[in-house]
Amino acid sequence: MKKTLTLISIFLLGISLCTAQSADKVTQVLESEKVTYGQASYFIATAAEKIQETETEEDAVKVMKAIQFADQDIKASDYVTIEQLSWMLACTWKIEGGLMMKIFPGPRYACRQLKADGILNDFDDPDSIPDGHRFFNILTDCMNIYAEQE
Image 1 (cartoon, rainbow, N blue to C red):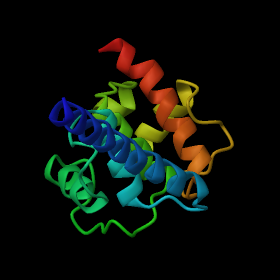
Image 2 (cartoon, rainbow, N blue to C red):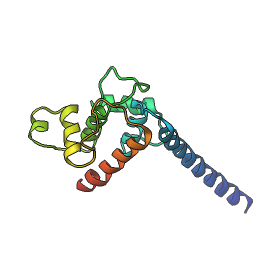
Image 3 (cartoon, rainbow, N blue to C red):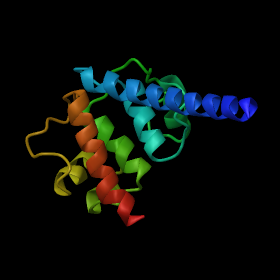
Image 4 (cartoon, rainbow, N blue to C red):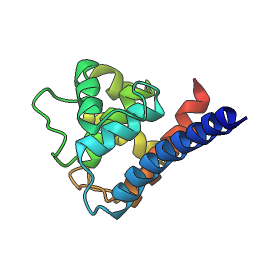
């Protein structure tokens, strides 16, 4: 009986620690005034099930580079712009976009497509760096719209 209770306790403690780690990462991003590539890559890759929640931001950036959703010279500590974030999201959810995005796939037209789909506002500057709240708003809108289409 003691053995069973001990195993159950260890299991529940492990679950709570994993949940606490995820909650800490969310809190960290929400508190940040500028989102980094590492933070964006971690949450996008986790949402797209390309990495596990236990992996690091550096691991997430490596995955994004490997599947060519991010430039090879990017570091996890670099800030991500709205335009670059749009490209990462467009690649992750395979957003087809309009004619120009099909002809010239890249960050510029990915950003325009997210504006056309109502995820980004018309006044969002493509070169601006989103804060944590704005990042999660964009990410959840993409998940709601594009994940349902898959």
